[in-house]
Image: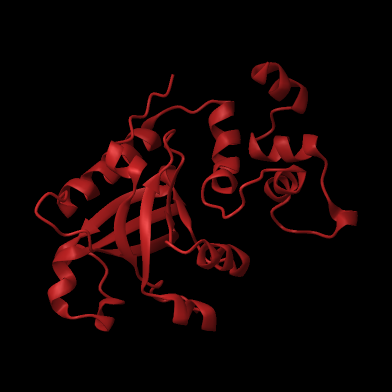
Length: 214
C-alpha cells in the first residue's frame, strides 16, 4: 500500500513556465530553451516531481542534452512563492509576475543547494491557488524526508526517473545499466548488476535484494 498520498492535481499535471537555473552555466541549447511551457507531475509513489513540455521531441532533446527534468521529493527542503521566491531569472518578465513565481529548494547536502523556479500560468476562475500547490509539494516532501525508507524505496527511487521523466516508452537492459552505472564508463568498465544493486542499496547484497522482491 502506498503511504504517500499524492493530490490528484499533480497526478493529472499542473501548467507552469519553467525558468532557467540561476548561477549556473547554461548551454546554448538551454539558453534557447527557457522559459519553457511544462506540465508538472508528482510520481504517485512520491519519489520524484517531474515536468514535461507538450512536444515530445522537445522532451527527448532535453533528455539527450542532459537538461534537468525532475527533482527527488526526498531532497526538497523548501518551497518559496511570491516575494520569497528566487528572482534571479524574473528579469525576463514583468515584475508583475512575482506573485506567480515558485522556487523549489533542494539540498542533497548542507553545501549542495539548488533552486528550481517556475511561473504558475494556469490562472483562471476555477484554478488552484499557487499557495495551495506549493503547500501540497512541501508537505508531501516533508513526509517523505521524515519517513524511514526500506530497500525497495531506494531501488525504485533510482529507476523512477527513467520510467516517468523520460521520453522512452520502453524500459530495457540498457536503461538498467544506465541506472547501475551512471558514470557512463566504457563497456570494459561496466559494473556488474550485483555491484550496482549494492551501490543503490548501500551495501545490501544482490541475493538479499532478490529475496526481498520475491
